[in-house]
Each structure stands twice: as structure tokens, then as C-alpha cells.
Image (cartoon, rainbow, N blue to C red):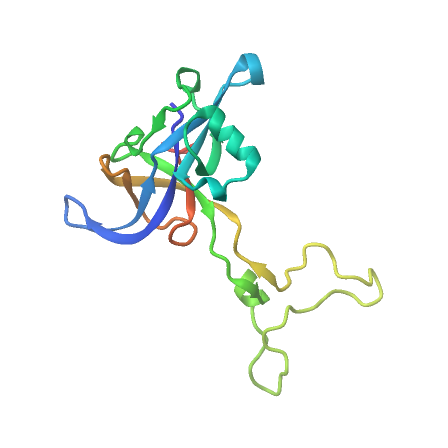
Length: 210
């Protein structure tokens, strides 16, 4: 069954498995998420639920969204996300989705926005080689040849150049849930996940799990 929840990255730590092997884990505050709106086949052509995560104040909410939340009667939420869950038809507005939809040993995919690194050169951004550092070379960290001078007389599309690095949607697949604290809605997931501390994450059951 499709399972999904919103969460925030709390940071990384380490746990020890039953065999004594050290396991690096990312600690995630997963939920609770509240169902804000229900999509149905009759009204929308498909079954899905819109969920909200993390409460916020009314003064920080736009007027259109204030009306949206007041209709649902669920309070104002910071993040909204729509999930096509297999049991969406059984859920109702106001229902909560908690971290206990997952269990220890489950394999999940985690999606987040990667850390922003600002303006970066080609070596940092694309991993290109630098120029020679000896024999009088004056070309060290440039982007390299820009192409032929006569034809086509322009920089070809796809040329790896310097520019903005990071702040991209990144998904890490097949990460296992090492520990679950259902009471506090905490997941400890093996390995690293995208984004900074406090960043929004989407945790779903893996699409490629064996």
C-alpha cells in the first residue's frame, strides 16, 4: 500500500545495531500531518488527500488560504502537500497521519530540497578537471574550450559553465527505517537525506524496494 508523510530534518547521529555495528542515521520529525482536503473521483476525477504539516499563526497565512483552512476546520498549516494514497477514499478531513504508518525495517524514498551553495565554478558545480598548475600556464579553474570560432560561432547548448549550485529537488531511494519512536513521531533513517536541518522532507515507501 502507498504510504507517505511530511517531515522535517532534525539532524544526524549514530545508532548501534543488534550485531554491534555502528549505523549512521538521519533523525526526522515525521508528522503528525492533518488531512485538509479530500479529492474524490466524483468531484476531481481521482482519489487523493491534501495534508498539512506544522501549525502556523493566522497573521502569517494569506487570505485565500485562511478560507481554505477555515472550511476544513483544521487550523492553519505551514506546509501543504497532496498524496495519492491507496486508502485515500477511506480518509476524512481532520484525520491525522502519524509516523507509525511506517515500521522498523521498512524501505523508503526521501525527497527534499538540497542545500544552496550559491554561485559556483565548473570544478565545484560539475566536477570538471582544472588546467595545469605549472609550466607558465595561466589557465587553472576556467570552464575550458567554448567551441569552434568560425562554425557554429556560438556556445553550444549543454556546455557546463559556472552558475547557481544547489536548491534542487533531490530524492534518495531505498533508505531503511532503523528506529521508530511512534509516541514522538520520530524516524531514524539509515544514511543521509537531502537538505539542511529544519528542511521539509517527503517520506514515501520505496518504488524500487526488493
